[in-house]
Length: 490
Image (cartoon, rainbow, N blue to C red):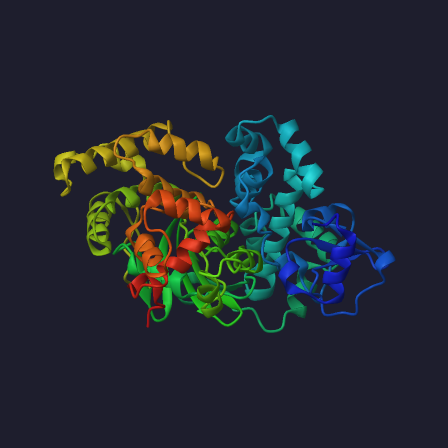
């Protein structure tokens, strides 16, 4: 969008927050860059240039605005609605792959050369993978500086910097302030770590946001020991690159309150990224709801509760296992099956607040499970053991970098995998915004009640007008039922 100068100028003049994260305004006369909704008086059009990423702004020598904090804007929704090389690379960078494995590791995961990835990212984002990762480290550092009382040395390594000197230089260059000056300007004193060493922060999103179905789905399907709903928050354990963590997510006006307890602070950026992905916080509700409203059948559902998100996952392999456990059984039965696997094969954790006891078992831990010990039909046992064998052996990979059509095809080739299982994994684990569930019982019931075709083939044809947002149409269809997945827990 940053190449459409006239449209960008209109968005800046109207201070339209819907475009935050889509592009950034770099002001030539002041050397700063802002989000479109910056509250200051807009500069003259001839003094504005528009760039596609915070990293591109920083690489061009602009520093972040101290009023609107453009680096803290919700992430671009482009990376969650596309499956091309650039989008897959951006999802991996957000997950910390460049910090852990470098650009060669990023290239190896994507199956391209480092030169090709550099070229693609520079062409579309104006910055290469190292600059994009650096911008993410700077934003994480600012978050910790302003919201905690942690020592600066601890913050430097938690944000992913290799040295304190690099941390100081980067913060000064990006924000035109030293780390100490940034902390002094923060609105209130830092809180350090709370009970149990928890860090508290806010996760922004684009409005509108209806949290009912997201939190309702997560709470209703929560696996005991791994997830729970407590005191108005969804809590779950996280398996992270350097250790484990516990996240508590609470819907609040204008943001999601996030409390993270981590065994290693270096996992903070990854934990934040996975929590945002879990709640689909980088979605663009204006584009989604605008498209779905063009259908007179869906328009009343959208108007009633706009901004529904797709409940996703923090671990793609975990969700695939749970999808197989949930084949043709009730939500309660699926939770019971998953809880047995967790108790027998999950890694135990200590929860300072109690309630959470384990990490969900990795595929390698499930690969040696005796099928006879699984209390489910023989065919589903075979499906589960086949899935975990392929996941553990690396012949099937599920992650933020997955190619959606190719991965769906590989899933359908596995014995016991029908369209519903492959599609629900595409929808919730892979993050495909156009995944559709025409064979799902809840979707078919809703379609019939609304006068839509209820047979899978006819409903798929009718849903063609909802592209590329059919996954969100599923949420609005599900919401017509009174199932607990659609209700924000009390």
